[in-house]
Image (cartoon, rainbow, N blue to C red; front, side, top):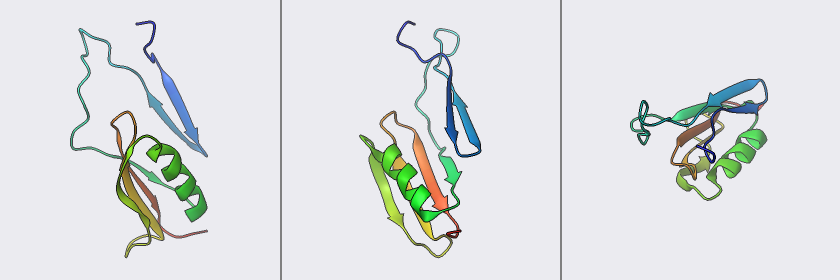
Length: 92
């Protein structure tokens, strides 16, 4: 367990996202299915910065772009296999 992340706390502005490793055998790891972590960001510039950082060594599923519902929207899977949706409804 020496190389495991027992507990992690990611701060993005006022948002706090907490996570931990699965601890077998009681909680064996299972790849996420049917979910995405969605972040609603206040500015297009910040949404682009976060998207770029999460996409590093990951896979972009939908590049960031303007859509009918947002000033900026994109989807990706990060290098750890976690799906993300990054949205900026309107640039403030």
